[in-house]
Amino acid sequence: MRALDPWYLIRTQSNKEGYVRDRLSHAIPEVFLPMLELPRSRARASLAATVVPLFPQYVFARLDLSQHYFGIRYMPGVLEFVSAGCDPLLVPDSIIDGVRSQCTDNVVRFRPKPFRNGERVRIVEGLFQDFDAVFDTYLSGMKRVAILIQAIEGRALRVVTDSAMIAKQ
View (tube, helix red, strand yellow):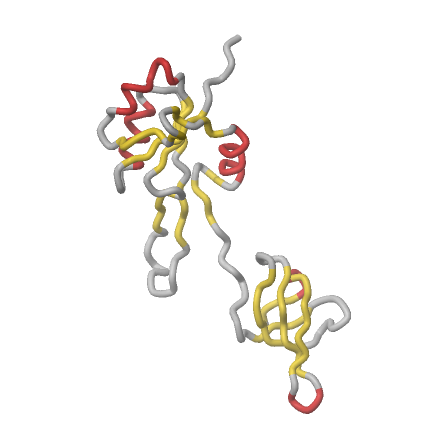
């Protein structure tokens, strides 16, 4: 049984990623163009989400370089293979697998952050359960948050907690 061909990164002309992906898919067995769904703003809430390449001007391709190099290198829309000197760089499978693990149907979708700075929240569990607070900020992603609890003489006490411990009022 023959080992799988390695992955390479191909640089495309601006806004030609989809075109190159489509052309490559007819010539080689595996092409990967991860896309990013941009969050909708309130102004565009009724419009469909915008999907753009996650890595603009780049397409991943699994191929036998000795068979496909010249056909791909001079394909319309292709600028070059990403290289170190004269040799195209191999992309480790772990990188492709890592990106794919974040995708659904080759699209990365980021969950919108549920809380906004200054928003009133209620603590639903823990030491301060049933206290009202004001959301301050996210810490280290969306797992930990800082909230402000009203304290004595109008001062706020800043508390760091798990985001699962608060809810919108």
